[in-house]
Length: 493
Image 1 (cartoon, rainbow, N blue to C red):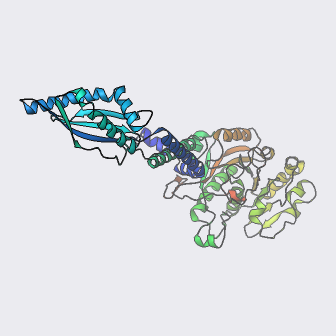
Image 2 (image 1 turned 90 degrees about the vertical axis):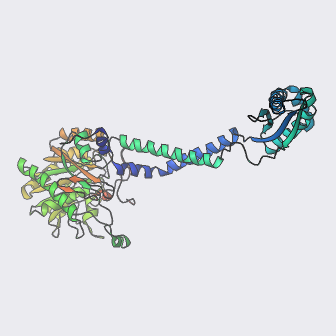
Image 3 (image 1 turned 60 degrees about the vertical axis):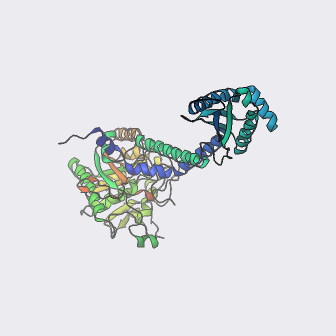
């Protein structure tokens, strides 16, 4: 097999979707930083840069008396330029120019030079404005006329070209160009910072990440499933419930769940157990809809299944299965408090082929309820009547209910949301589950996003991006220290 180069290996570690998503998520900050940089650049350029303007006059220098006319004129021009360079830098000339212009200081630079191999001399003056440059060179020319004899009586200097008024600066620095450059460079730099932070974020973004970062087996991967499967669904506001029994459920989505469910059922049969606990570290990772689909898939294999909503604090399964306006005859919480019998509160959905114990209200003392004798007795009785018992528990970071239920179940598994929880936190949760009675069997990576056209091969199915968005039925409203993380579901929830 051909070995991968360092670059190709590095590129495979990059999750492009998470990078792009983080950039768009922080686009407002990126724009603010770029705008601030452009404003600072505008101020700096305007305060620290001043344009200069130069004007030039050309003179013909000749010698009055010489037998070698050309040679003498060249020497005369060179000598005149040297003499005038000294004069231009003298305080005497500066003083006379200031008196002529009626100013207190000489705000210009003047220089004289000879055009090579000619008897032409140029006089250039540079100042901060076109007007100052022009007035200064005119004043110098008037003053020099009175000093020509002082320099040399044998030299004649005649104006060949009068100096013009400068129309543009010597080297223009465009404020607009500099501010635009600052905007673009800052925007790019901040974007790269967010991309780097996204790359360095120690979360699970792929099955390879799950295998490398977590001390657990992979039970499978489920890709993000859009809320609306078609344009008509969007306009009819017909949101998908992401259940395998939906008529419009995608074939690849159902097949992936069949494979994951078969793996879990195989483990349960091999070990001769029935009770399976499904949990997650944080809210909005999709464990509730995963629990529902696990129960539905097992039921479609002609198994008798009991689905229990063990989340007494924020029940979710009733939102998935009950029809609008439908009420429960009794709740699991009432039964666990000794207020009702199991037969009176069980919800039998004959269409789906599963029975459920649901809640339609919150129980603040949920930990006391699930740790009661009635919960343990419920699982003992149910294990005699059902092939599988699936328990949807609360997130582990919210309360201790998950660990209590893991002490009563036979198997436990963790639903891991895509790019949601840091790997160390996931490993801590895995260690906690391993310390409980239920045997921990592995993790399912859920709600994985891919860019259009991206090819992923998991469990024999390649390139089926768009499955596993189960989080929109989670209704924890920012309680507990981890509240509000990782919500990729319905924003109204």
